[in-house]
Image 1 (tube, rainbow over the protein chains, first blue to last red):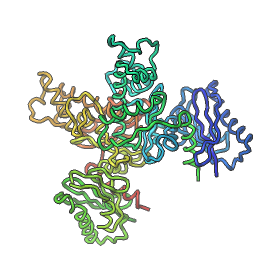
Image 2: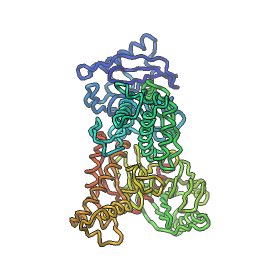
Image 3: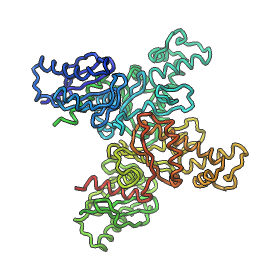
Image 4: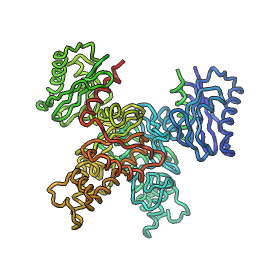
Amino acid sequence: MKYGFGIDLGGTTVKIAYFDQEGTMLQNWEIPTVTANGGKQILPDIAASIRQFMDANNIADTAVLGLGIGVPGPVSGKGVVNKCINLGWGVFNIAEELTALTGFPVKAGNDANVAALGEFWKGGGQGCENMVFVTLGTGVGGGIVVDGRLMHGSHGSGAEIGHMVLDKNEPVACNCGKHGCVEQYCSATGISTLAKRRVAKDDAPSTLRGLNTVTAKDIFDAGKAGDAVALEILDQYYDYMGEFLGSLCSVVDPEVVVLGGGVSKAGAVLLEGVEKAFQKYVFHAASGAKFALASLGNDAGAYGAFKLALDAFGA
Amino acid sequence: MKYGFGIDLGGTTVKIAYFDQEGTMLQNWEIPTVTANGGKQILPDIAASIRQFMDANNIADTAVLGLGIGVPGPVSGKGVVNKCINLGWGVFNIAEELTALTGFPVKAGNDANVAALGEFWKGGGQGCENMVFVTLGTGVGGGIVVDGRLMHGSHGSGAEIGHMVLDKNEPVACNCGKHGCVEQYCSATGISTLAKRRVAKDDAPSTLRGLNTVTAKDIFDAGKAGDAVALEILDQYYDYMGEFLGSLCSVVDPEVVVLGGGVSKAGAVLLEGVEKAFQKYVFHAASGAKFALASLGNDAGAYGAFKLALDAFGA
């Protein structure tokens, strides 16, 4: 039996997990991400933490097949990071540098794509060959698996599905500078925007009016309690999600669409609403896609990162 | 040196071509597609035609690595055709059946995907790893190559990019039954519709008014001659194309977008117009995609079909 590490590098913490080659997470922990000085300390910190863990547990170097790491920015197939603004990083080969620091072979990928690979391997997409993974968080990110392989894209940031255009006439700009991106309607922030706009439209009574900030959870809760305005907002949300995923799946034709991120905590009611709207917008040949919730939560990135290493250096 | 056949099976003719393993098309010809009796004669006709060609040219069976065939309908990775309405076909394994008839191994794929593979190999996408191929004909079809491999999709008809949604408020239904598909605006038929709608809107003078039916060529020609109405129609067309390809490339992040089909005969002016609009809609990380014209014309399907066989059975 061989072992390895999956590393999920975020803007505030680094999640590190130790796996056996079957994908059992044997141990996991976090260290802070030190972004000072252009993030120069990040990789040495990771290397030291892994070495400390190995020493404490008497793990021989020969038992380790390699490391995988998910990075919050574009990464080429050869491991070249092309700027991670959150970390202060420029352009360099992270795989080579982390190998030099640890002595182990390293495979790197974009964090959203890597999380998709984790859900594909051990989460909501288990057992399928083609999968679309969507994270509905502050933004909308995701990853696409085609015939069992991650779609990295030719510039290393592949599957920027949150920036497909849904309404080119949207007056407000997206964070990316374009107008009417999926992210502006379908993210946790997006559904709050839809709520704000709906509430401002007229005087219809709603429990949402009493709130200072309306979160995705508030809207789903009010919907469950039968609040008519909340139900209207949810219908509009499902319609945007259906159009977005209908277009996307007409292209990708996956077996499964896995929904993760904060909004997905709404659970079955979300799946049901989205799937119904999806059928209105998807091309018939791709309409058999199943919907599932992500099941690995914050560990998806570590699972996927280890899988990257396993695919590259295992057996 | 080994050899093989690429077969492009259409609703009225079957194009058959003989290749060496380097991809040189040594010979090509056509036979009619006999769709009577549920298309039962189609595969025996192909087998007989290939055998006749081999006999006439003294080609030994041992020189042939295999056959590839593109089919106008969904085909699974294992060669199972799932209904070709134009041919009268139901569900059966075309690879097994054509192997039984010819004695050669067979690989089958959807015709639009196979044409994409042809352009990727020997046409407008040569030398890249990730490509989007778009045919702008009566409809909008295409294929997507990810890391050198065709994206077939889990139901075998992958990359139905013509049925991404551009305007869900479109009152007229698409042939597929949905509303506002890419195909309704971006196909040769689509641009004629845009012209009809624009001309009907007011009394602005235009040479397009004199015509019974306005074709894509008429519109591009009038645009070149400075017709203001035609230029407006073209701007609208480029905007739809830009939105469509901007969304698609934000997902796929290809190096090259290859445009083929009837509308692509407009040439450089089309590329220029589309690329400009594309920059407005694509996510910045994917904005480096280059635009190129398809270069294999009606032979793309035969090239791609042979490439399928070469990838599967060649050395």
